[in-house]
Amino acid sequence: MADSSFDIVSKVDRQEVDNALNQAAKEIAQRYDFRGVGASIAWSGEAILLVANSAERVNAVLDVFQTKLIKRGVSLKALDTEDAEPQPSGKEYRLPLALKEGLSGENAKKITKLIRDEGPKAVKTQITGDEVRVTSKSRDDLQTVIALLKGADLDVALQFVNYR
Image 1 (cartoon, rainbow, N blue to C red):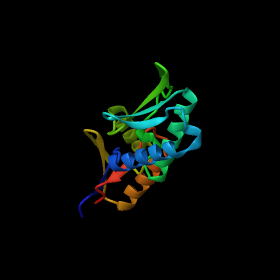
Image 2: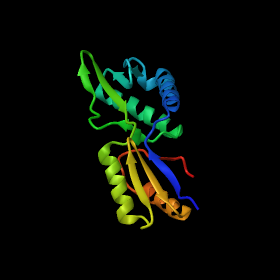
Image 3: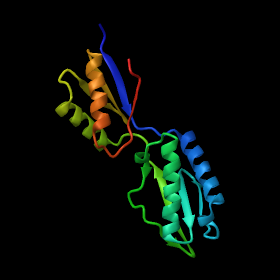
Image 4: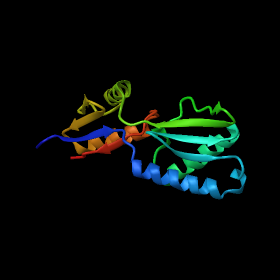
């Protein structure tokens, strides 16, 4: 019998992010506490730009956007909020947010090390580009690896694809 396998990837559904952004923009335009503060959220190239007249309002816009992402099933780990401090720009504050896609080399190594250390012994891992292929003779071992990774505290949003 052939080995079973699946791939571990980190991808963002751009359409869901766009839908969440549009919902957040609509809510910001309608909410009373955002009147007169120049609050907005929009795409800026590949990044998302949050704008308001105070740092607190920018953080409130970020909160609304994160709520919409959660409702649409997009992981907040896909947002790059490392240095999430609104920066003053003239009379307004701006906060650019990037989307994290693909597994970096160090994250892929962390995942393979975690599988090697805590996963079933018959499981093999292989890093190819920005994804990790996991193979085993037993599908139960693969299910165990998926459960292990879902329970792990990694700073990247993981999806499991090509399960065969």
